[in-house]
Every structure is written in C-alpha cells, then in structure tokens.
View 1 (cartoon, rainbow, N blue to C red):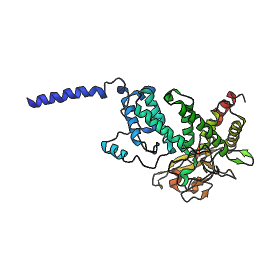
View 2: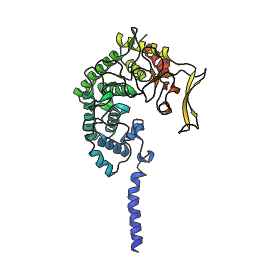
View 3: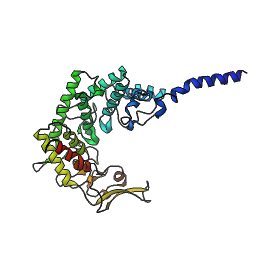
View 4: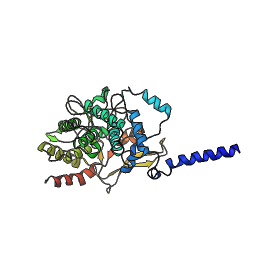
Length: 367
C-alpha cells in the first residue's frame, strides 16, 4: 500500500511539474535550447521566454571583468553547476574580443531580452559591455581585435570577419535611439554617435589608394600608420574581396553622404567591378586520396557567376593564396590541403553589392 501511495505521490508531483515544460503556451512552441549562432535570429516573442532568460543569464556568466566577452563559445548551451563555478573563476581572463562576432553579438542579444522582459542585471551587463567598446576604441576611430590584450596582431584595427563594422552598427543603432536601446542614457547615446563618426573617419583614412585611386581595404590595418597590416601567417597585407563589402555597405547607409564618402564608395565599387573573376567555380570534390575524402578545387565553367578572391596583391591586384608557411602563391592548388580547405579563398558577396546595393544607393542619392 505504501508503494502505491508513493507512486501516486510521484505521479502527482510530475503532473504539477509537467505543464512548465509542455503546456506553457509560449514554451510549447519553442525548442528548449538553441545554438548561440542563431540567438539573434529568433522571433520577437521568443525573447520573452524562459529559455531566452536562461541564455541571457549564461551570457552574464561569460562576461569578463573588462566588460567584453570571449569568442567561439556556444553561450546558449545549458550549464552545469560546476561549469557555472568555473566561469566565475575566469572573470579576470584577458580574452575579450570583437572577433567572430564576440561582444557586440552578446550586447544585441541582451538588449533584445531586456526589451522583452526587463531585468536590471541584463541592463547593467549591457552597460558594462557598451562602456568596454567605447574604451577599446582608438583615438583614430579604429578598434583592435582584442582589448585589453594588444599583443601581436591583436592590436591592429580589425575589419576581418566584420569585427569593426559589427561594433559600429550596434553603436549606430544606439545613437539613433532604436527601440531596443531606449534604456541607454543620453550621455552614452551621444558617446555612441561620436564613436561612430570617428569610426567613419578611420574607414576613410584606411581605404587603400593606389596610383591616386581609392580601392578597398585590407582585413586589418596598423593602429598607428593606418597602413595595411598582416595578421596570421596566411593573412598577409592585401586588398580584401570580402571584408571590404561590409565596409562599403556601411558607408552606403550614411544619410546625405558627403563628397569624401561618395568618392570612397565609387572607388571601391570600381575596384570590385575590375577585380571580379569570371568563368571559374570554387567547388568541393570527392577525393579518396585526402584524409577527409574531399578537396576544394577551381574548375573552369563559362557559365559560372562571378567570383572574387579573398585577398589580392597590393601592387598587381592578382589573387593570392597563402599557406601556413607564409609564402604567397598565385594558385589555390599550390597551398597545402589543410589551408586550402580550411579557409574562404573565394567569395561571392560582392555580387549582391554590385547588382543590388549599389544601384539602390545611387537611386536613393539621386546619382
């Protein structure tokens, strides 16, 4: 009899707990967990859920004492008590960065959650991260890849993978008083506006000029001279066919652009038009001789859409490819299999810039 009562008791408790996970009208339609790389892609109602709140609290645990966040971590993954304890012990780590979407992505997420379900701890975390971004900006308007760790190429002004442009978009939204950032005080909003203007000045000053003509940008620039600068051994001084796309789009978003901004946009567009590669495709093929069973190769195809190389040599404008030995090659097949398959050596992004964004910008600005 006692066993029967115990079973009924457990069944009753289970019945009480079950609606929290299954019957709740919001959670019933939501996956209990998401991946961090989709944290900004959810429906507006999702940010009012308990799962969004859980992830926001995770984000707080990962925030460093500097105010920024580390990169390449799935901050949406559930944490054990042991992991939570370990994270509190890592608060003073010197790995805060804007690389690979770090810090500004966390801030955008916190603002979305705060807008949907205001919690002071999330607002306070946002403010610390926001102040971190302002503090990390150089006087010349650029942002380093890491801060306060400025060792090696970490100190360079970094456009690579959209780092600096990602920060500037966030600050611009704050400056423009977008609804999600209505909790930001006027003093910080004004600072955001000033930081964006300084960032634009830095962009214009770092645009590479060759033979008197504006071209595009390197993935990173020296923080003092503003000249193109190298990063990892396979990321040499060059003109970037990828990072420059987002830079141009940001310049195109400036209302009533002055003559210098217009000149910068037109110069970059001309470079993209001149630098497109036709009649080739960058494809993955089965290759049993390789450990992974595949290989990335360039094949001729007269019907292929245009491609652009990730990097172009400064003086010749030839596409360049570099392995871990740091030696420039002019064919991607000449570098080792690991780097050939582990990096985006060809990109398609400039096509939309030329075919859609640029014509719309010209029309909008009466050109």
